[in-house]
Image (cartoon, rainbow over all chains, first blue to last red; front, side):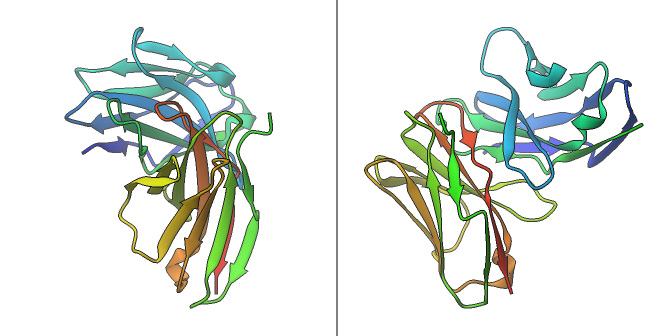
Length: 114
Length: 111
């Protein structure tokens, strides 16, 4: 079975500052990893994904994440945030050999202040 | 491409009633997954449909049932509604081994 831990429930940050949202996972099998964003009263939008290959993946809106297999982490980063990045961010994993259900973290609320 | 669509957007029901939520997948996708997201929580997997059959199910009671039609659209049915069923219900579509794309969700309120 897989599990996902998002280490920060809330992250306040000032506009134009860098941010890192932390995600650790546990799995006995190979997994694919995802970061999704959810704006207020909206559905989920894929930010980026790691399936294989380069451990540094770039996504939309200037976000990137690095897969670290030895530390079982997939932290999300952005060098300079905007007010519009204020949202809930979810890390998720899926069994790479059995792509059926996404296992989700509890989410990190990013609040970007002016 | 319209993407994943869900209907209705909002719904209010009373305890004990039954509800049906609908999902149309992204064009070309053949797999539909349903998730429940309670307020302030991450999504929880309910079940997944492929080729009109339930392929996998999460930890939800039998009150939650579904169906997939030949055109790949899907319904989620919940019987004997409880207050705790109030949540955002998300539908995701994918190819059988591909990335899941989410719809905007249906907000269900049970009073």
